[in-house]
Image 1 (tube, helix red, strand yellow):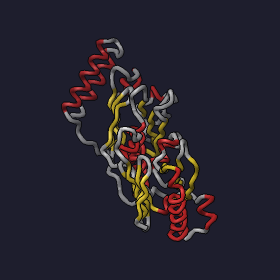
Image 2: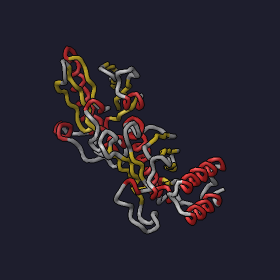
Image 3: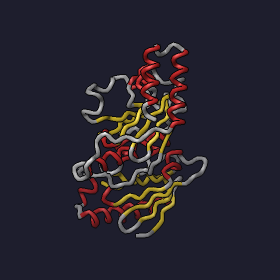
Image 4: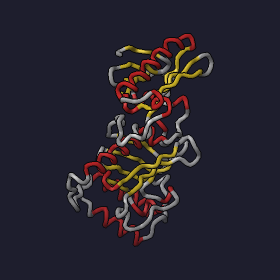
Length: 302
């Protein structure tokens, strides 16, 4: 189609096989939209298109994604507010006729490109077998209440803050998880009281022990708090990890994984971790034996 429809906070460009969504970067634009910048949504990633009345003299054009097509929406798991849904285009009510035209055009494109019947577009599709929408690209990072989370595309790392991390996490030490050891991510919005991001590990990669039921004690999770782990930082992070996990799962059988290979740590990072460990020791949060053992373990990483 190639036409452009400008709404509030976003512009949709209708291409022959996809919809290119460009988000504004204004002060009033939701921070998640600003972080996403733009997203290309293939027609095959959509199940339906709706147009409905919005608030205060607006209409909403909504392209509904298929289940399993977008790692961002999979991670969100229905927790996003309507105002933060990147698949909703809000327009002034006087543009309803124009919006209806584009809704009809997009519905026709879904039927044509997907060889779907009209009732398929209305009632939804089978879940996608793989992600069809690209997640934000790493490297990504954000600060949680109890630590800093980083993702370089291959490995998720948690570095604990001594001011927020539980003693269980401090004793476990900073963590690193190759995506090949994961089978998913659990994200609970920081906009609720007990928000968190938790990595779901595959069997055999947790020393034979189940993951702790309390997220605060789980070294494979970071917890959110007021001002920590905001949606626009932690949700794209979770989506990127999910996409990498799916990619690792699909290539695991075809690509042999070297066993027992681990890179050396940055000496400055190890020294910083030893300093934090010493602060915990002085504060009485770890015993002499735990301090000595953990320090020796960290020195072995050099």
